[in-house]
Image (cartoon, rainbow, N blue to C red; front, side, top):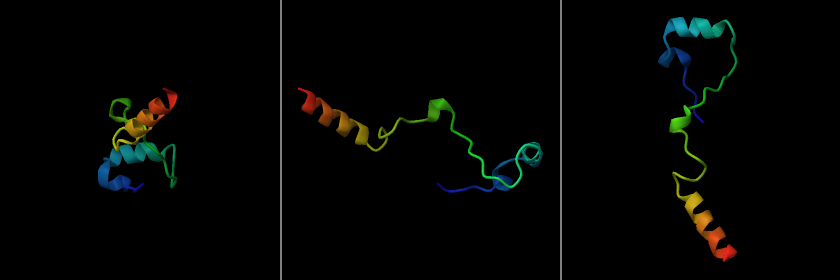
Length: 58
């Protein structure tokens, strides 16, 4: 995971508001649900494992 400096991407007013709650800590801001991919869907790993599991089952 790479880190991005807040001052590079957020407006100063928003940074000041966040600083009311968190100072000098690392915080995680998740992606919106509609942009989140399930594990392995982008790389194709999920499909390979599903196919393997299906062949073992039958």
